[in-house]
Amino acid sequence: TACGGTGSAAGNAGSDKITMGFAQVGAESGWRTANTKSVQESAKKAGIDLKFSDAQQKQENQIKAIRSYIQQKVDVIAFSPVVESGWDTVLKEAKTAKIPVILTDRAVDSTDKTLYKTFLGSDFVEEGKKAGTWLVDESKSATDTVNIVEIQGTTGSAPANDRKEGFEEAIKANPKLKIIASQSGDFTRSGGKQVMEAFLKNNPDIDVVFAHNDDEGLGAIEAIEAAGKVPGKDIKIVTIDAVKDGMTALSNGKINYIVECSPMLGDQLMDLAKKVIAGESVPERVVTEETTFTQEQAKQVLASRPY
Ligand code: AHR
Image (cartoon, rainbow, N blue to C red):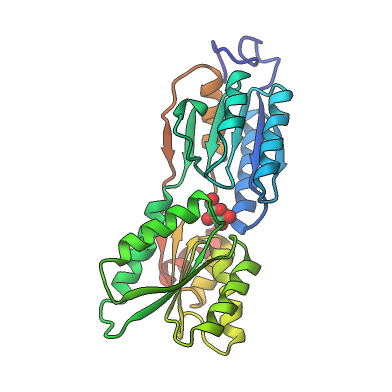
């Protein structure tokens, strides 16, 4: 609970609820849907009044939502920035209005770290590295070049930038591994399908797909099957997220490996928000704990996956 702090909810003997304005990216993926649910459920549990907006993957909508939260004088603003750049102006407005901001899931590239209190979310570079390291291991006996196509996430977003960087870094360990094409599928299933269709048309010899999230990988599966090839066998697939649909495809052998990215950020977010409002110190970075899944491991945990 908020106690002894400077926020509007503090000192009101519990009569006044904390209000949080949350500016979500959109509903582009299974991951995002699970993340929204986690934030909404955790706010309820924590007794926090949540104002929620969906930006439909557009930065201008997120900026509008943040400005409206400032106008409404919420106690705290939390948001998952759709892209990394271009936030300084609106974050300065929040700071001037003395409304603390918490970044969740995705980072901004602002050099002024006083514009937000903390950043809660995954280490996306590490996720990309895990995907690349798996492929290095998987291809250790390859005698020919391994042709990789990459389906990137939303252009300019932290997870797309960082996963690309981490993956490229890891695959340097084997010079046979070559990215022959790379394009954005915007983190959606339809985007993944379209990009994969084009890749298949232009490249007769694709060995591996690295998709920045499960949804894009699931779209790629549709394109590969439509082209008469067998996903997971003729073309191997590695993705990131580990949502139910992705884990199902992994269990069925259509995906070969998934790096987990946890969307369950709600409880930690509400906890951080209460501390920030109470004037307590919080770490400037809180990294989510995550694992990886092989096909065998996916079979074992599939039934108990919560999202
Ligand atoms: O920012 C996290 C990423 O965004 C997830 O990997 C992806 O599925 C989502 O859309």
